Image 1 (cartoon, rainbow over the protein chains, first blue to last red):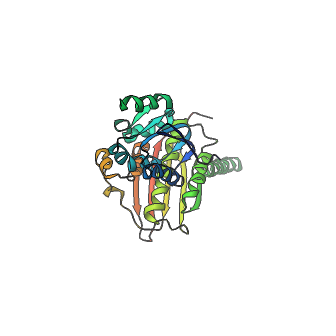
Image 2 (cartoon, chains in turn cyan, red):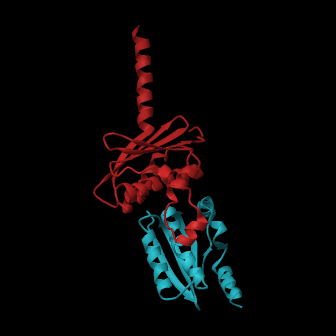
Image 3 (cartoon, rainbow over the protein chains, first blue to last red):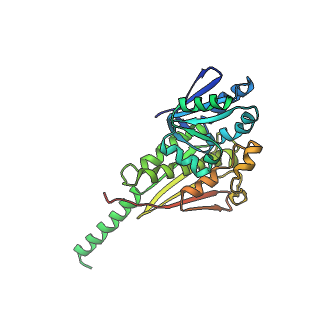
Amino acid sequence: MNEFNLKQKSIEDINIIELKGYLDAHTAPKLEDAISNLVNTNQYKIIVNFSDLDYISSAGLGVFMAFIETVRNKGGDIKFSAMNEKIYKIFDLIGFPRIYEFYSTDEEAIQKFKSSEK
Amino acid sequence: MNFTVLTKKLSKNLNRVRNNLKNSRIKTFKSQTKNLILIREFVREFFASKRISNEDLEKIILAIDEACTNKIKHAYKYDETKDIIIKLRLIEDEFIAEISDFGLPFNPDEIPVPDLKENYFNKKSGGYGIFLMRQLMDEVKYEFKRDGENKIILKKKLNIKNA
């Protein structure tokens, strides 16, 4: 069974969170802590990479809703990258594409952050 | 009734019982979020020998996860000693999951359809589970029994390819 794993890296002032495995009510608090730590240290440019995420439930989706307003108010954003079709369909059911930006790669999301600085 | 007819009838009944057993599973899990992964495996195993589409399987797994998550959070308020009973049945092409708890009754009809704009400003992280279940399944029903059993019934017609 594939558990949940979360890795973080930063490129300049942009933070990338890479998700792996299963994001459910048991593992969502780990993601919540990670985003919370970034927000508490005034790091508001966040990219979440979904390429290795196999599963998401509403507990995982909810984490993004808890922070998006705060992050955008501070001039940042939470952008999604490399999401597979299966996971995207769940985001789509809830209507997330109306709120969040989705990119094929981290690089595209980084470029978007950089171009909006100008 | 002669012996041959009786034997045939018995054998037919036996087959029906066998099929019912094969198409019905029941299991009790403790009300703990760490068990969600086991619950999803339980559902996956139930369908292992049944030819349903991967898309339907993923929808069912997510709907059952959402139902159990709701019970852990709302019915049992994270009391890890309590039980969640999951009964899975396949009757011809209809899948039925009955998920029971004995905690606080929880009326899902009082939960509004999530309003993303409102939730955005209120930083609301919950309230999507019931909406998702309704999107993923054909029918979501609730039963509250006098003995304290709260049951959620999920139904979905499946496109089963013959084995």
